[in-house]
Image (cartoon, rainbow, N blue to C red; front, top):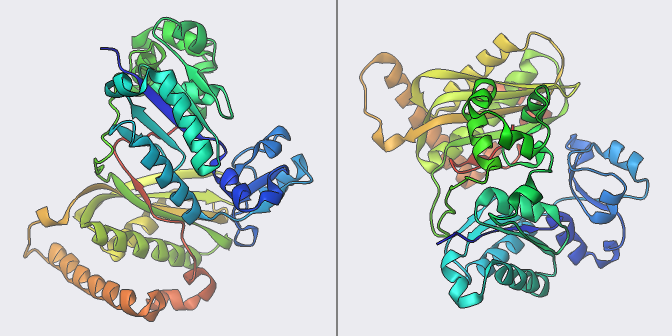
Length: 414
């Protein structure tokens, strides 16, 4: 039996929710944006009025203002977005127990086993659109196909409030003329590389030699070829499945450029303490630390290195992070933002005790930091701080972005 896969995409989700709570904004160009005073001043989401002026997600606020002088910026309210996302998922659960979220505003649904109850894929998609609009007050676009890749393509093709069906019989006519960058997993870097070989559309990619794609893109090239040819068979996760955590990280944009090593050390310490505490919360240790650095000219890079022994202490994360930074930041340019990520996770419960000097020291540090966690949970984060953080109150009071927890099934664009 051929699968019936839906991809539901809540249209301009953040901006749509904001306009619900502020009806006076509904017909005006609106963008949900970060705090310009804290230098998080980029567009996070925009409505169609702003989009019509050329405003794009990720634009700095000054650029958005240039494109659309009348644009109105509103701060994000993530608790509202999570509430509406949860309501949408409850609606999805009435049609299938195979629903796989992709961020707050997108979700795949496998309704293969539900068609005898609710009708074919298009019928179910239209019912979802009608219910989301009536019960949430926002619109949704739904793609219907026989695999996840084409279902997502379909939801992107017509917006807002539309259903697009892509079948095995017509996908070549619908999908192949599209730019290769429209395909999931084909990010800007991959698209640019493919263009060097005159591979510009999804059809060009599908007709390319599979071994050649492997030679220039590795396994990702093979995966893209499979997707372009409609051969994706990846399953939709069960709605009750709890995905395994692949990595835990945190990032921040500093309120001022980080110029000295002391600035970098303070910021890394704040981030590492946050990541370390979250690892203890989930009972993980890590073997690899990854840092991300963006300078004041918005050039960025990532570096990673292995720890001598798997652990989760802020001290070890900090030492490796700063070491990677010193080895890699040869340009000397002031730094705008930093990130720290703990990778190659394993369960703490599987770790064996050791009497060797270094593991024993790590275990002692772990006990100390666990005690600090308990004090902070009771009396607040600033009740206990390292002396390093007292040298610059502005940087030590940074509010890192919400912890990023990445799962093996999560999709990342290159």
